[in-house]
Image (cartoon, rainbow, N blue to C red):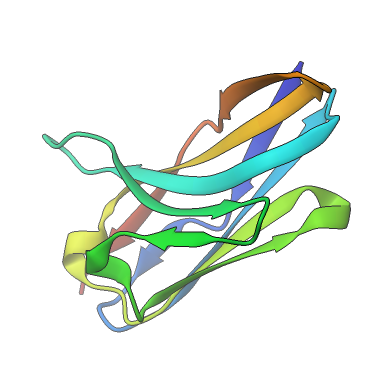
Amino acid sequence: QVHLVESGGGLVQPGGSLRLSCAASGSIFRVSAMGWYRQAPGKQRELVTRLDSDDSIYYVDSVKGRFTISRDNAKNTVHLQMNSLKPEDTAVYYCHANIFSLPTIAYDFWGQGTQVTVSS
């Protein structure tokens, strides 16, 4: 079993910054990809950013230039630095990971979610 533990959410004023972290632990053979989704009230969950094992990175257009994803491979941890936050960034942010528990078998895992609220 694999567990994802998130930290770093909270309340911030528009234009402010937050840093989210997500640590994976458990039966990990290899991490394929880690990233963040978010879900705002009344909206579908959307992929915000993803960092693949080949270091390719995806950002949704709305966060490009403001958010930065990074990874600590030794600690199986991914970070999301969020700058210039806007009210429309308000959502529950979920860490997602695609992890090989065995050499040929990968599964998707989710964190419990952390609230990010951008408001004055």
